[in-house]
Image (cartoon, rainbow, N blue to C red; front, side):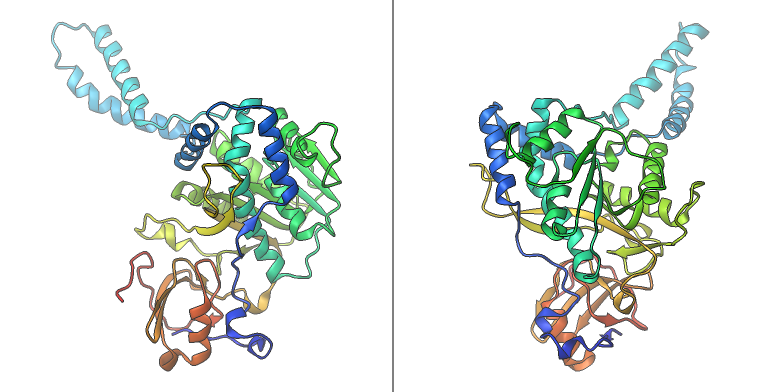
Length: 432
């Protein structure tokens, strides 16, 4: 049964509605300088049918899957070969060579139809502008929410250096500058596309090549530095893991990013099952170690959103709903955009060594909080590595926890200790 965890006596300093488990942000807004730069760029370089292009790109990125592994394709081909071989051998009027050729064609044809056709994105100048219009604001919102987790829970963290892998149009730079602009002195932006680096720099210059950089200390690179001797206080990879062609490359990049991490490593992906699985894959790579180049022996700790380092219960169970969160944001001012939009995303944060020990095991709210008369339905992921559903009441759980729970929303942390509570199916809407 969950009970209030007021060991730090936070209730003597703040009201229930502002308890330290509240992680959510208000509506995220791109800085005015960034918004103006986008408008300047898109007005100067007219992209025909921009609305249709942005809609198509958003739909494509949301449905995008990981590239299939060669090993999996070979196994699937062997299964299909056995299946078609039985049918082929009974076809009359075909000699052995014709049967082999037909079998080969049938297998290849079936593989093409049933396998996901992953292709790398081609970041041309035109595509970069479409990507800027489609993803700049939503990406900024998701990264801002993830970084807010560190800023709020570890207020003494004052990063001086940032490494952004897959920097794209610069959402991470703008988000980090909004939070730690007073302390950040160096921003290393790594993107394999030269045209995206150029576009990101143009946005920072207000949309003009002759403009002054709005943020100083920025360096652009097309290749990820691999030396573990130079670390960055904050390392971020946002919406970039699915741009890598196979597991081997993802493993290499994740290990390199962790080597380069001096304080926190932040990973953000789409809030789809595919995005969640990419993050859980990265989680295993970092926690299980195996990297031959170890310079920093401080252990990897999962800082957020998980309150544990056990197997993700969302993957262990039969649930098909990923672990994701929602951040509202003010979109770029295009005629087709509404006044407020929402970005659904998944994120994962590692820290070098344990931080925030007092409250690290507080349960994470992993679904909408349902308010009912005299009780609150909370679905949480807890430190025992299981999903819990609790109907919290003042009589059963105490007034303090009840009031805190009523102020929680999806993505917040419930300031509670969980003991002897039975897991339930988080993804079912509880009866009212």
